[in-house]
Image (cartoon, rainbow, N blue to C red; front, side):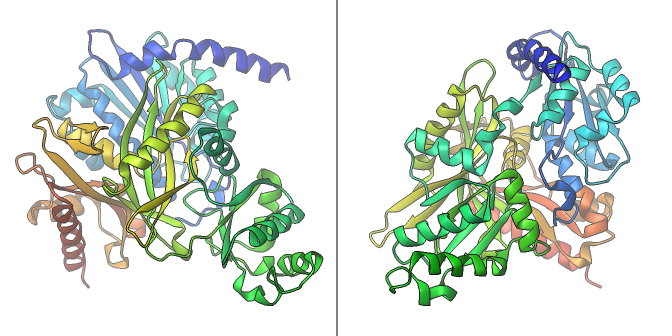
Length: 509
């Protein structure tokens, strides 16, 4: 216990310096500033997640290279696997106003050459010489660490390095779980789906499903979610239609109905195809979970609002998106479209800000996102339901940050639009999952060459084109990320479609 208490005390002392360090990192002024980027995927179950090239998601934070636009900034970017130098040069080329060579001198990219599915922070903590090297690169009097997500591993690393950490305190992680999200939604007074949380046993799950079945008219399916599922891979769909003979109102006793539910649980459809009922239940018992009504409307939308709670006390909405989903009943995040539909984007932004105020009152700091489901009524009006909060960076973070990196524009919270310095709106469609077997074997140099020859690269003069990211997975998995930008939604869609057509043509065998 002494070690934990000492770590907590040291961490609290470091965090007392976070406000001015955070303000300095992206601010003006002559002061030096050092930023350590540790894009660790510190998630429960990351060692067994079924996402091709997931280790390369550590590239999502390359937008942090934009901090090098300040000539006194130094940045250290740690990764599990090496990032191709051409990918780094490409990202630096998006930063305007500073020569690449000048930024290169102030940038250290430190790969550990360890692609095992273990959180990056844990890998660093296992390597004392790496910690010593990081200490030599980051000046403690002006240093700060920023991460993809924050867990006790990142807290331990911050203490080991003696620098504050930008992100939510690990002691508040429960606020970002599925159960914690539902608590915050109720506290904020925003609409949420019928359901139940804090479920940790099979009996509690059965009782919750049965209660939801009785209370919700025409309920056909429910979604069961682990508290800390990542990208939909902790979700499962339970079909009640197959149990219609014991449905509420059919004269069946509660005991018989609950037994039927219990017997049918192993037949749930798991989003992760490698999951089984026994493995799903084991994790539910370990970390808890929720059950929610499944919305059957095939035209439902999945928007999200991104926010930032600063260490200096400000709370800002920074974007809204319509998320693109795929997989088992649309449970897997596949990309996003900016901005969210005008019919509801300001409503979800208002609800998300109310949720963020609850989190801020609890002491949360950092970037977060509140996800919603929206349904359109017969009269054309939209109804929104908050479904989860992510107290971390996510798939919608880096497309917006890359656009800011390129254009130096701003998000207008009054309209929900992104405006260039000339005040003109821009729109985009983004994905980390543009994938084809024919893309396997492409090197980053090949991708950038194809894009140059076919005129795909983003052009400042036209304020449109394509930004490439997540290129580490390209050669091995035939998978990459793109953000297609246009001055209208239609132009963004056209760039997206053209990119797929060009890559398919150029890699046709």
